[in-house]
Image (cartoon, rainbow, N blue to C red; front, side, top):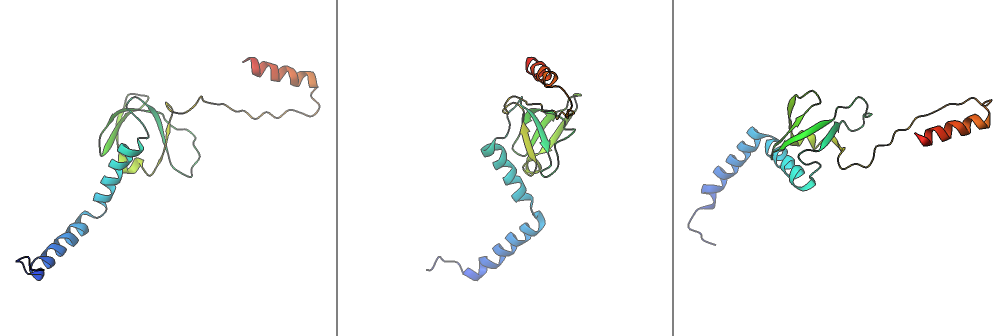
Amino acid sequence: VDWGVELQQWVMPFSSTVLSAALVLGWLPYETISGIIYVLVVRPYDIGDRIVIVDPGRPVTGFEALIVSEINLTCTRVICWNGEQHTLMNHIIRRQGVINMHRSGQAVVTHKLELPASMPCNKVSELIDAVRAY
């Protein structure tokens, strides 16, 4: 096929430009696009939702609830309990676990009670009735 241009005249400059841009930018295009897709397609939260961001594989203890105030393509702005505003990059949030308190069901609190074997049955029944009444 003759397009009026020598293939060797534009392939080498074009490929070297693409490789140079990939070397300079590194993972930036991938991270940016994946953050945008995460916010637009997955939509783990909306404005006004109370969320908690946790590290996968670590226990969820001492977490801080954040209120989403603004969602952009590359970052999300949140407000802490004390009024501080933070900007979180979407591609970093994508790697973390997001617990959305607004979309989650009712919170359940569990307590482990150890009772002595010598405790009378009527006292155990009273304890169970008191917990249910609460």
